[in-house]
Image (cartoon, rainbow, N blue to C red; front, side, top):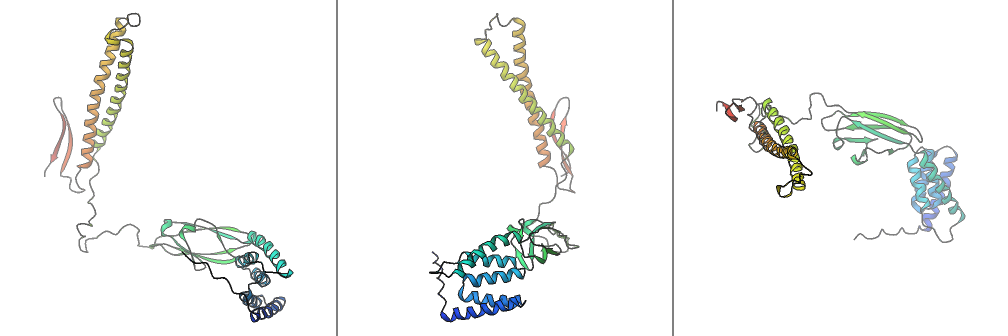
Length: 325
């Protein structure tokens, strides 16, 4: 188990005195217009004592410099600093000002919504101002400070695309980037042009086969249609059988319900449905078998010297091999 983080030591008297001096000097620089210099003093003072007042001044300096994200982060830290014993009113006021600052900055921070086309998400490498964006975070808005930013997008085999974006406060800016292949480079797997050594037997790609012959598709279609018809007549036969069992138990029909003609019609339906179901089922299985054979046994491309051909004559039905071996 990971141990708890070590508690921050209380600042010494020297730390507090140095921080107080830095805070005074920083405020003088800020009032004179040197916000960058003031920020350096505030940052040093806050590093020494981590007080609400030093944090608030640092956050305000970052805000004045357009560093809204850093300002909000520091203001949030001030709000959650531990309360000290007998805390002076200046600290309490600084905490309240920092809390208001957090909400106000949240609404002002702009975001960039990057949309990349041309490559799969798991290939894309995107950076904003040189900082990489995790692929899982690419589809979501990215919070940034106002101002100019550079977006760079690339992927293996693709040219690097760059965009410069100027963000305004509270703006949600969509940026669309389409990356294109490097000229002469393909994302398809490379094939041996004949100049290199032959691939190992275990790694050799399968040879392409000839197209499925038309008759195989036709046989398969006829077979499936016959199987569908067989199923339909099987259902009709089952219905006729159920009616006979219900109306004619023991093969004896009630003459009050069925006359001779209706009994003959029911028997004919029984026999017709059964015969057609069996016949169409056999035809369907034969057609599907021929189609499967034509698909699986077709020759390699460029070596079509043999073929599986259906044979239908007045006296015989089946398939035969045609060609030379």
